[in-house]
Amino acid sequence: MSAPYIPRDRRWHPPAHTPDYKTSVTRSPRLPLLSVEQSLSEITGPTFGHTALGPRDADLIHNFTGAPAIGERILVHGRVTDENLRPVAGALLEVWQANAAGRYRHVNDGYLAPLDPNFSGCGRCLTGADGSYTLRTIKPGAYPFRNHGNSWRMAHIHFSIFGAGLAQRLVTQMYFEGDPLRDQDPIAQTLPDPAALDRLVAPLDLNASIPLDSLAYRFDITLRGRRQTPFENRPEGA
Amino acid sequence: MPVEYPKETPSQTAGPFVHIGTMPTVAGFRGLEPELGQAIAGPACPGQRIGVSGRVLDATGAPVRDLLFEIWQADPNGIYNHPEDPRVRDISQDFNGFGRVAADFDDGAIRFETVKPGPVPGRDARMQAPHLNVFLLARGINVGLSTRLYFGDEDNAGDPLLALIDPPHRRETLVMAADGTAYSFTIRLQGARETVFLDF
Ligand SMILES: [Fe+3]
Image 1: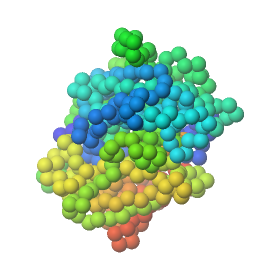
Image 2 (image 1 turned 135 degrees about the vertical axis):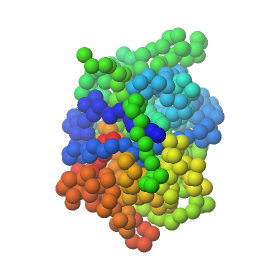
Image 3 (image 1 turned 90 degrees about the vertical axis):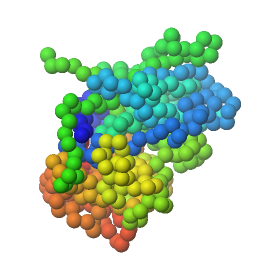
């Protein structure tokens, strides 16, 4: 017996076709999505246990060579809950980011800023029973990209989230409070409602910072909730 | 005023460097180990072994080369490796169900091996034809795209999801060509034969 997920509000997410973010023009479906009722195929999804993770996966400051990465040391923490405010426990969060100079460790990144030999830019963790998570990293730098003449990405951390089922799968980006590039970042601006972008901006959380060590930012994540009315998903004849 | 619920966190594109956080060896370094999704079905899993290959094309017909392609599927008996599948106790041994493949940086090719899934129950006890659930992430894709891949050598006529597709000729955008145990697909993000993408 499984309750389906609350439908996704597509008007709140960025549309597929956002011409100011040029790459979306040729990569956006133009026909309507087919709206389908959820079956086991959508309600189930991959789940991950602690055995799948390495001991330092959540510490991006040290998880590449062991020596500390260069940059402003930060904690990123928050809770993953659903639209009914229930914690999502055991959710896998995967993150990736540029280093403090705005450069990615990726064979296809040709930005002239230097690599940090001690920073890979990848990390992951599972949420606890209360949906909480904590990552240690350095604050990523802004970087330019080829879009319009002088386009820059505001500092961001990419997040991939696996909830309890495929219907909760979400990939997004976390931004930082007070970033001066917010209003001209073509990707942040794909969001039609400024209130949606506000949700991706992590505020400084001084109380969660570690004195003499790291500042902290808080990024709470909301995944789709479930309806209250269950339906039965039974094999034929059962 | 309607009841207000907290809204879902909005989506943003995965960008071109999604591999760093998901498949770092593809990005060019050793990072997270083990990398997840590397074996949908291990060697001890029973069932028919199959190979799947394909490409995802943009509006100009060019392959999307920075694509991350995720697969979620049932085992050969149509059971999902998930606590909410009522038959999960009988899941095949050495079966995971989740796979991740990066498109080739040169030609966009996507290739993976798995076992053929069985039919899975749909709603109202109607069976669904065997299929792979796929999720696409790439630069320029603002919200990850969901679709399904069915098997050209199966009887797909009674599948309740395919039956919803109108006009009917678009159903074929979700059906892989079969050649023995090799299956192939072309997903078109846009254009005359645009693939049917799902909202669920
Ligand atoms: Fe980025």
